[in-house]
Image 1 (cartoon, rainbow, N blue to C red):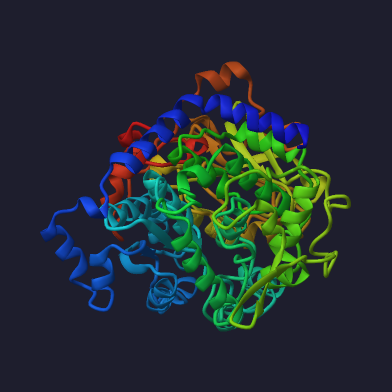
Image 2 (tube, one colour):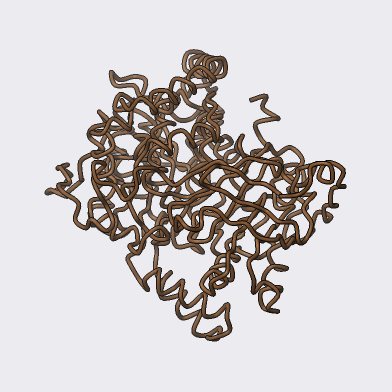
Length: 602
């Protein structure tokens, strides 16, 4: 193993010793003495069996595993619409393996792409906690010996895992739906967005471009949070090998889902290959996820989500770990917004099998993790349809070295993440798509309290200068920590005009973080005393990703004596008032920005 990866892993194991032991004791108790189907009373079982007639006799005879399906299906959103017939198909495939399957429950699946810049976005992060709770409700019936988790997009996969890990004695497999086929190229889409921001094209042309990019069922094709989720599930060994980026509606996608259903039936506690989720997700698997994130230039959202997933399994990972790993892990992929190719181009060039094979060979991934499918080395092989099944083969050399490169010849010797710290607190920055000459920006601040104010100032020409845009009161406790993706086009335009531009915020910037330097997730957040509350218009701020600092260049005595700005009152409407309990209980971003762990004593 690479010594830096080993050192980080050892630190996480040591830091997590107490919490991980408590977690493993919990799932051992649940396995040995927890609620199980044979323990249920006859009336309870009758209620559980009443919804199915075809499988009732098999369930009554208790002849095999009953698989609970937790699904994020809805037909408003492209990524989740693909799941429409999955339960129906999986019931057939379960019978092929001597098992049964039932839909245990559904979880909400909202889309940040629809809610970006609008009030509904303030529900987005806490939809993850809602999904975790919904998953727990679905699995609470004691009717299942295993579970299939059907989810793919931003908050859905983390939420499913956060809830499912509290049932970690059960074997579970994540089943993705795959990305839509390539439409309008992401670079062209971004150009139209920037032209619209400058008033050079109208709404009709912009809408046509957006529909050309997001045109059919499946995930968006850029390498944002949704597709980073799928990368992480592969490097954690929670998918069938190679399942991440097969397109919907293909024979390969169908056979991968069928294989996952068969595999679930084989890894239950009554067999000789028991693989419970809580043992699959250990400290080494969490490190693998962080390494994969850095090696592929994935979404900054996972600097929040991965700590939350880990915490659900009794594991503590923090930004120091990411920073240390980033200095040892090479960048082997360039996928939009960190390159020109989309995830279909990435898959065609070799995809996750290539990445895993390369990182394993370089000693950057732990090869001894317990996966749902077999040895982790199997994830370095590409699935191919053969007859009525699958075979796996070596992915070969990169099909396009502008997209994928071997670990011995990476795009960069380091990953694209840095911690920033100073009198503005701690923040994260993703630099994999930022030109090195922009890693240090020093400019006067302009302070805003929401992104609509930024857009208005941009349109009025007030930002046509060197500027560091500060957007505060965007943290989890203030307003649910919405993504500020709407700022990407105007800030990109300012940068294109030759100005020195950066963003500093206690909010999120999403998987679309790109070419503009952005210090995000500033902690502590402005609400409750965070130092962003002291910043005033005109203060010179230095964002330095080279040396890892984030400073307001204000006299220390003056800085210490400044009063904090007042947070605007919590907004109502669009259901935001219902999430006040979540906002009040939320942790800092580095701990996962979750509301449910405090109440659970985790």
